[in-house]
Image (cartoon, rainbow, N blue to C red):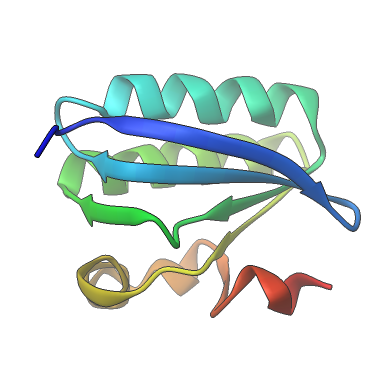
Length: 110
């Protein structure tokens, strides 16, 4: 299995939806962070769709924290949607809801 990260991009309602596909770990965190920062600089309402994210490490959690901090500073809205399985467990253990509004599904946005 290839250990990489890819992205899907679309709009849903007033949200720019960035799907993270694969892994957000030490190897892919720089690419993931750069992509999220670019999207954040271009849009005011961003939904990170984690439905196809298979794994997130502490490096991936740091990415989520850094971009949440940027969004807050720039008064932009960023949410997490669709995390499941191991990714959801890790986010729950980390108490990600202290930093993000979390939706069970992308369908819950609108």
